[in-house]
Image 1 (cartoon, helix red, strand yellow):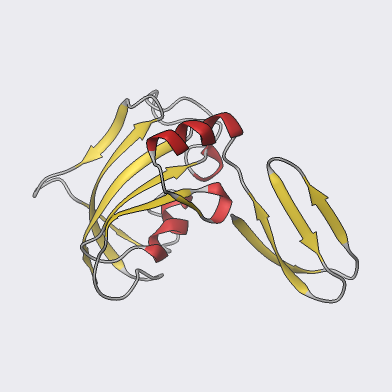
Image 2 (image 1 turned 180 degrees about the horizontal axis):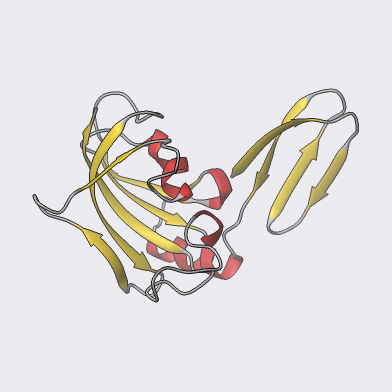
Length: 164
């Protein structure tokens, strides 16, 4: 779930099929929003059975456990990955010894999409993961280079090769 922490001096309770918001007087509460549209969620559930829902409605599935500490801000990560649309169309791939992707977690400007940033703390070196990312945390209304339509949920299969 997408998390925001705020202090408010009043109470609000709202429930819908997409969002749950709870603010309690005088305390900080976590606000969670699931940005994955219900139709996309049904497809993702079929493609990734057993995936858990994390921040923003991102679906996270550990395929193979990694070892060592979890990835954190400032870490330099080397990974291979495949990015796909919900229909299975591959739109990006970095795979193989000479085609890895290297980036710094939490860099400014960001070197990976927000969906990766929110998922990386659940990953470890040597692990393999599948994540389904709502458009809000991927390529939003612009899409990506004619390969990802606007407002698309995308799925990444990621293997973490190294963390420094």
